[in-house]
Image 1 (cartoon, one colour):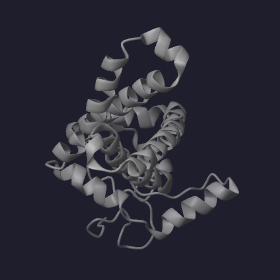
Image 2 (spheres, rainbow, N blue to C red):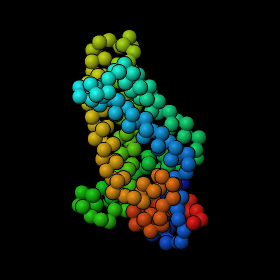
Image 3 (cartoon, rainbow, N blue to C red):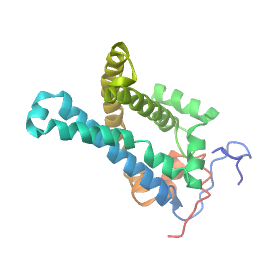
Length: 220
């Protein structure tokens, strides 16, 4: 079975990937490194933000200056794993997949609204694509507003005030989104296995991502 470059969908119609035997390689080591490193930095940013904005946590942790420093540098480092990971061909290919919406992605969204269990997807479903796009945009906005708050001479007071407002409320939205992401991953052990080991069960792939070509098959 062949597929068009940058596309999850087979060229020979909408026939799902055949059920050949053997596990599938879903993520390479470089991709998993980028995911786990970025996740660790994001969680540290959220944890330190909580310590800075919630008095009970601030009193429990103390050392506010250290917490601020850790928060600032982890936030500044957030894009670094992805930028380093761009050297991986597999990561670039997956970014191309995440950046494209196919007809079955719109069908996936309609199925979610109807609460249907038939939710066709390529290597990434429509929800994962939207989450990835939203997170990337949020990180850029958080980085920009954070720099305005950190380097006070970059902009006038009114800009810094607006940046603080956007930064704080976007941080709340990011925390909610990350919590939802963790909840979804907790419900899917095979998806967690894919990110932990790089490999997933073929039956799971055929059921959850039927239009993923599965070209990266590995031996058991």
